[in-house]
Image (tube, rainbow, N blue to C red; front, side):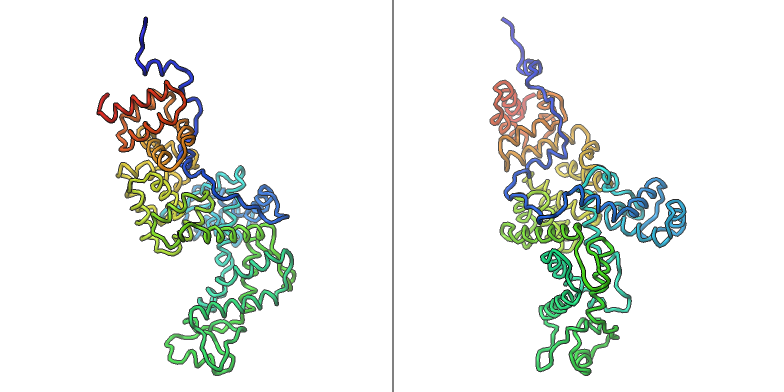
Length: 489
């Protein structure tokens, strides 16, 4: 009668080899794969994502050409494209310097080019541009969100007047989306005027009394107070102000500016200034924004107003897209420094799920979080997350970012993710997570997990043994858990 050590038997059993390979980037998101909300369908008649992406590529064609030119030239230009680089790009691409400048700005706004300190580098979207339709659409939506930067307002208009119109434009877009066809400009003007007055009333900037506020003119002074109907009403509201008033601007002129800006990014078309119609891209983008608002409104316990830990717990029940929208809304209500500090504080806690979600939220923050995230690289519990964050921030594809980790760091992250799955997921998720280990066999995985020193190693191994249907593997995993618990070899 012969005998073999359990680990030798395990290694010889081909059924217990890890034959499927999944990236750590996928494993990190395994715990958030639970879906509690059916994916909504876009409005009837919306083109397929592939067609929308084709249209977005057409809108950003010049921006992509310039970004690719810059990637090949490796010119270390910053936000304002250097004059010499602008002239070279114009000559090489057969564009005018003005077209190069506009394309460069669009490339930055769409995430095709990213600024790292004083250096501009190709963004990850540029590398994914020809193969990833959703990356293209996200890039175009980023440009859509920045329409007021693509088409700047006149310099002599009060900033508060511009801000009022920018804040009111979503109502105009909603009307265009609901109308599903051309809308006359006078109808849009009436809606914009009403919304501007509502915004002033919400800020208590409308003078109460026998005089009414004109809806034909927006803001004379920089203080943002509205002009009255009579010739003296505006001066009455401005009385005592030490600020020089800006030019009073009819709302109609700012509506023309807004429609031109939205047309410049491909969101709508104008019929000789008489009517406006959303393009398929614009219609889809407005629907996406409305969907995000609905998701945020339905978020558990009002996540946006909650501390970071409670917000992340609420987002754990959302799919990745709505969760990112929630992160953006939560971040918008806070200063960047306080939000980053709060997220890193949660990441240092004991809940591995919240640690992973905190870094997903920090990905939404982007460049402003770099210094604080980089400073956390010396903390063992955060180091793998920090390295992955930095790799993706510097342009690595999320699926390839795990290559920056050492074997020990990858194993530590595997255990940490397994702890999140064991605490918050289902046994099937834990079994699927087993396939994402970098080791080729279960014995090799167990050896490295035992040596890794993760504080949750015992709990993870016990949960894995309980979930696995194979008796031989479950026995070996339980034995490894016992050895870690007792300090054995």
